[in-house]
Amino acid sequence: ERIGTAVRAVILERASGQLVMTMVAAGSVIWLLLTLERTGWLRFLGVVAVSGVATSGLIFWLWQQRISDDSLVRRAWRDTYAALLSIRALPIQLASSVLIVASYLLTYLVAARAVGVNTPLLILLPLVAPVLVTMLFPVTIAGWGIREGAAAVLWGAVGLTAVDGVAISVGYGFLVLFSSLPGGVILAIQMWRKTRPVDEG
Image 1 (cartoon, rainbow, N blue to C red):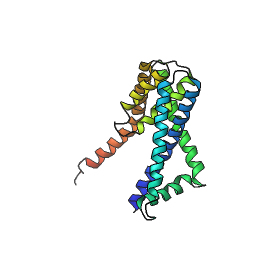
Image 2 (image 1 turned 135 degrees about the vertical axis):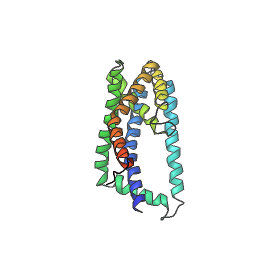
Image 3 (image 1 turned 120 degrees about the horizontal axis):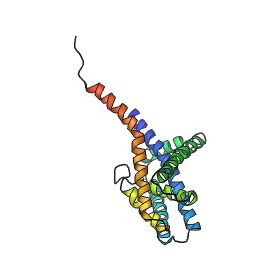
């Protein structure tokens, strides 16, 4: 039971950040639709995304009406409400998640400048969250590939150079990878200490 509680806690912690990222991405798409002219593909993708989310929500709601109070889904919902949606937890979760998402966006902007892309900030910023949210799909390692594909499509949809979108996405991936290397070194040292033979005598 303790392990199950710990696993659910980690899942909920991750879900809170991803929920905020999804909300930022949705707001970014709406902003792009309202402010840019070349949004044919973007409108299509927006309609598909909104329809998918609405359909998924409806299916989940209908499904949970048919399950018992002691089911795993009901317990998961109670945990979710207590950890994320209660009056005491919601402000803290929102504040921490917003800060984390802001760090992702800032890292992406740094990557853009690092690869020499000088797209104005007000044009570049709304493109970031929709690209990053594609990393939620568990089809590649750390979002590699799907993130670059989304960047190419989105940059082209708004009239920018698709190559720039891919270059920024690759730069972002390397920045995140390099920033995690110190933790990898510490993990490797700990594993080496556990596996080395113990001196006798």
